[in-house]
Length: 219
Image (cartoon, rainbow, N blue to C red; front, side, top):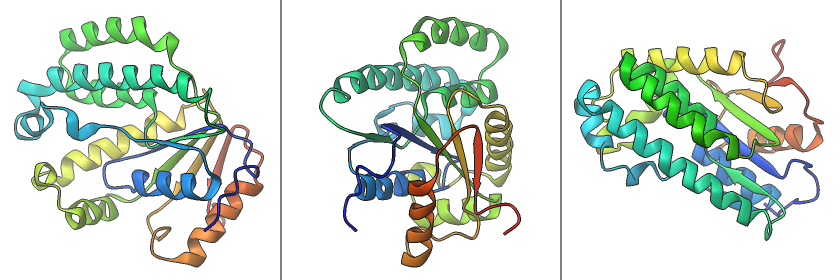
């Protein structure tokens, strides 16, 4: 599929979703179709992540701080990328860091985290468009098992349900950027070319303000 760089006005697009929603796959599709630079979250570089999945209470704080600082460093580099690329497509939103912190940190840890977050978040550029991939817990669990990452194999449905609820709550109150909510429970935007083309056409033709939904709720 050829690049359509001039079709979409948004120069900085961030894709979000719960673990297993397909955000990296969608980010790659958007970058391939609309052009620009792809920026991917380096979650596998977090040395505490495997330990966190084994013992979230013990390793939650270390995992969260590593993610916060590595994401913040990468966000600073986006400023330089903007000088050389017409568009940036990222497979994460910096602001979502707070979702995991609120779920995984104890009270005193959360207080310290929030002080550090306050010191760095003012320098982070907000996206022109945020795409939130929403999916059922059953679909998320299926996708997680399908991709077979070793450190995710013991992830419980209870944890994914709590995470999904937290994401839905966060994005129902998100107003920092225009937001597109894509219901991906029954949408195969990777394997079904017609569904992918219809979704991309909707994104290309839309003038994004506030919150929009795809497919439209009545469909």
